[in-house]
Image 1 (cartoon, rainbow, N blue to C red):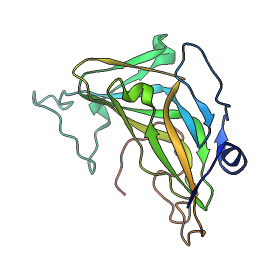
Image 2: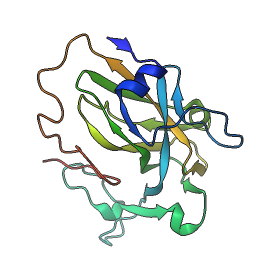
Image 3: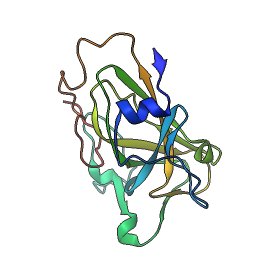
Image 4: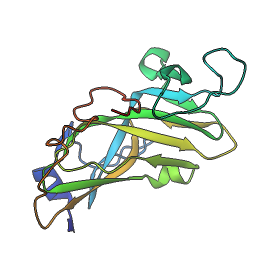
Length: 192
């Protein structure tokens, strides 16, 4: 496997909108870089709450097989008029990328957090984007600090690294009709 460079990413990977990585004073960087692409976080966030939505007075329980959407508070920065969302201490939020990504059949993408947010205690997790995966990426963002922390909408949050395989896979994510294929909005966990 080889890592794709900036010109290869532009030629081979479908990224819309595609941005060059230029200096944007006062903003967390985004766009193509030497060997990756820094994606932006969108304006819609789902922030975990620690309240039982069914009103039993206890703590909510996260269950990936029976996921309750009401375990989140939805925040749209476009509606609030703010340029950021605040993630509570030791909490978690879901968001989606501004960019729509179309991974070629012979490429695998791995996501890592940007150092600006990592140095503030944020961990960004995304499972690998398999060959022929398409859509907006749902980002899992953890605030590991004991303090509330800000995430700025429309700015860089994580970097995608694209690995080109030596051979084309026999079955791609599109072939197996993956459950997160072509997700158009912030997608919650599901088990089919």
